[in-house]
Length: 56
Image 1 (cartoon, rainbow, N blue to C red):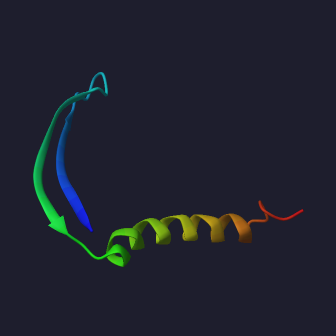
Image 2 (image 1 turned 90 degrees about the horizontal axis):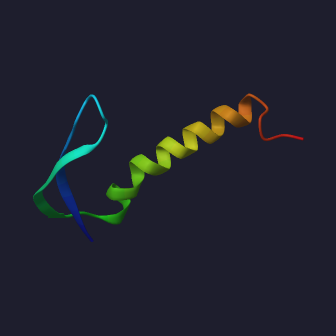
């Protein structure tokens, strides 16, 4: 699959996006692409599970 590397500039006062620039298109394995997202959500879920937020 292809992924885009994008450079985005934000105004620090307003938080609005000023500029967005396509840097590069790269070919990336799906596992490599989704791994950081899965780790982030899995860690968050496990922390909440251990804290008892998902139990009855």
